Length: 332
Ligand code: 13P
Ligand code: SF4
Image 1: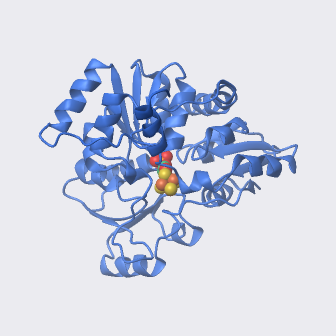
Image 2 (image 1 turned 135 degrees about the vertical axis):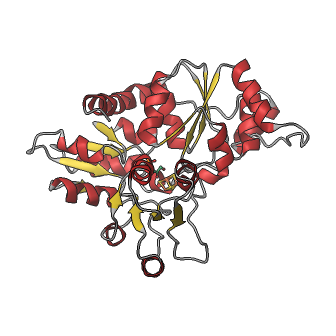
Image 3 (image 1 turned 180 degrees about the horizontal axis):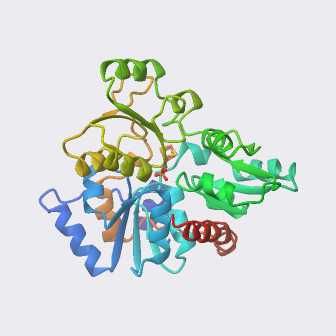
């Protein structure tokens, strides 16, 4: 970073430059994408207009697989910081951009790497599995990374006598423990978005729509998961609603996924599970920091860029690649 303008951009974490209101953002983004040989990868929790312009929309596993195999020169990651870091780790020679550098993650924040390193020291004979929702530094302290799509299978792929630490999500960890019957040592972290669902309001919705299926993400708390007809990653939930014959679903995860569910099954009804506040649906404040304007600016200025220390990339690559290998072997 040299110029005052660039330093200013870095401090803000996003390109705070007004976009000409007369330009057609969608066609300009598509033009810049071609000109720069860029690819836009978007998570299901992004605003609908960002999902609609993306080259690939997916869950954390799908997005990692795409980031590892793309031949684009520039990856624009419409998601949160740890996802863009994962893309950089998998494609270190490519330029990885995040529309808003401040798009963090409460779950990732709940596990500071220096504290995790001390925690890990207490269990020297344990293997460390970390959920992908964590910093690059934390991945560098891990043996295998997992996502909500493959956490159960990755644990099951290890010998029965293998001792395991699982972090940072205590809810996904508890779910994996239950599914596999394995005794995992859990880090006590959680996602603010998935821990705010109101049991009472979900019960009331189920009373109002007795025919509705209740589907939930494994980052939700155990008492919410206990009521679910289906538990899975965002792409798992989407697939379930496409293949299942019900007409109505109550969906306990971030509300951005409803856009793809509704697009894939236009005649079905999707009701977001309500949180414990006055809102009707649950948005991730970090995911929703990205906007179409910021995406345009980030492609135009090629900023903010994700940069990581070479040694962190090297150490974090192994556990992520191990996850991708196991997933490929299992056909995930
Ligand atoms: P998946 O899309 O991998 O299920 O992850 C959900 C999530 O919380 C991402 O932040
Ligand atoms: Fe992080 Fe939760 Fe937002 Fe996912 S939904 S990015 S886990 S804060």
